Length: 84
Image (cartoon, rainbow, N blue to C red; front, top):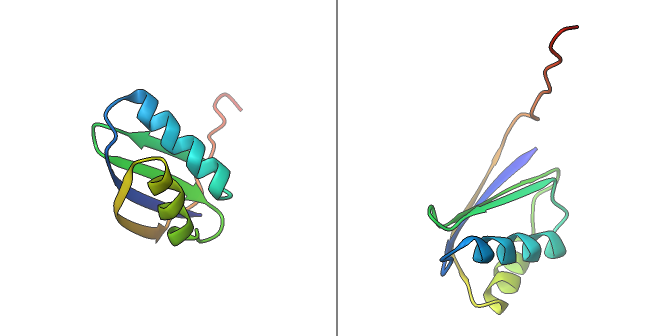
């Protein structure tokens, strides 16, 4: 699993977060995406490396700016079964 963090300028509210999440889902094959306007970042989990230039272009077209990005390999989250 790959965790990609995008530092995004211009998010001011939860609607901004929703716009970014929608753009990411439409642009890339992701498992999970979560944005925070307070932190100014979007966290993306994916199976494959993302096309960062395409994401930057798609996000930029909506009026936001990707200021920085970085990716790292992470372990797949494990599900715990309690009571078994």
